Image (cartoon, rainbow, N blue to C red; front, top):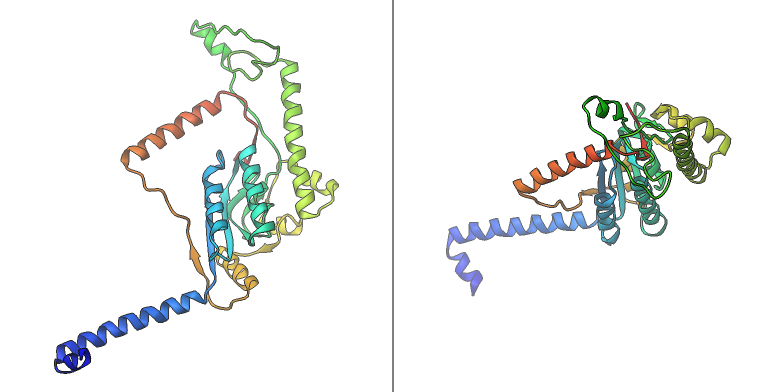
Length: 290
C-alpha cells in the first residue's frame, strides 16, 4: 500500500531513493568500519608533573573492548620522578595483561619521557628524536643573601637536623649535600634497574649510558634503548599489522573535558602557582634540562 502511494508520486519516488541511498551508504560505511581495527591514541606533549590525566586516558582505552591497541605519543622532556613511574607502571600493566601498547617518540622523549616508554611492547622513534637523558636532577634557589640585603630575617623551628634541608632561606651544609646526593643516587639506580630489566641490556653498559647525555633516535637504536625507527603513522601501521588487519585502522582519541573560561583562567593560575612553588624547594626530577 505504501509502495503504491510512492509510485503514484514522482517526487516521493525521488525522496525515497535519496533516503535509501543515504541509509545504504551509511550501513556499508558502518559495516566497513566494523572490520577495521580501532587504535587508541594517548598524547603526552607536556612536562610530566602529574600522572592523573595520562593514567585516566590509558584506563579509558584499557576498558574499551573495541580498542585493539594503544599508541602513546611522547613529546616530553620528562618531569616528576613519581609521575613518570606511575605512567610507566600503567603502560606496562596494560601491555602485559590487556592489549598491546606502542610508544611513538616525537621531537623529545627524554628522561621521564623515556622512563615511561619502557613499559610498552615496542618503542618507535624518529631518527632525529632527542631521547635518553637518563638520570636525576635536583635544584633549588638560595636567597639568604638577598633576604639579608633587604633586611628580612627568616626564623625556623624544626624537629630534626634535616627537616629544613633544601630551604631557600639558608645556605646548604655539607651534610645537606650528602643527604640529597644519596637520594639522587637511589632514584638514579631505580631508573637504571628498569632499563636493564625492560631493554635486556647489561648493567655495565646502561651505567655508561646513564650519565645524563641525550641521544638521537639513531643513536638510541644503536644502543638498544629503542626498538625501531619510524613516524607516528608507522606506529599506527605497526600496531595495526600486529593485530592482523590490512585495512587502515580507525584512530580514537580519549574524551576531552569541556571547561568554561573560568576553568581555563583558574587552571592557568593554578599551573603558574605550582611552578613557582616547585622552584622554591628541592624536587628530584627525571627531566632533560635544556
